[in-house]
Image 1 (cartoon, one colour):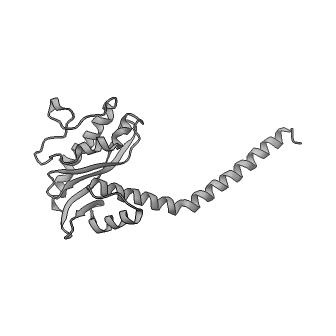
Image 2 (cartoon, rainbow, N blue to C red):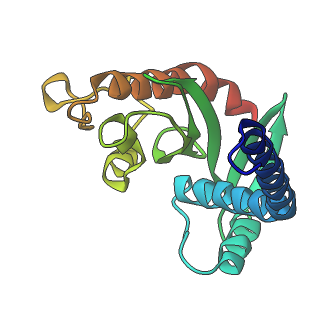
Length: 198
């Protein structure tokens, strides 16, 4: 019987059912942990975009988020306000989404309360080529945006020759262009609508 075709088929089917059930149980059991980790990562990304402290334990990150960030819901849009020690708003983190080379790029652009200076940019989800376009997640690339003036009305550009202060990612031209297209659209079209925030 062990050498028969049907024994092999039944063994593989039984093994598949057992392993699928184990995987399903594990997924169900750890789902709350996974969701908590995703929420923590999102809060840390918002803190990073708003140029707030992201170091420390999970509890310290949660404390910083609760103390210095306030959610503003506006027409199905979730905007995060940065609060100073007195509780006054001194910046906003606005979610963005747009097309990259291989898929959607999601993240947050944070600006000062007067909408004139970038506080930071964070990418929370992207499918770009690792080692090339995927480098948009690197701190060195993201930090180039911190402190950039956007109040003059001129679009963000790459390279010193065109007056830009941002270096594109070598070998990832399409991703670099996609990032600037997404951010410029957000700055030119969406941020002016936010001027009515409380």
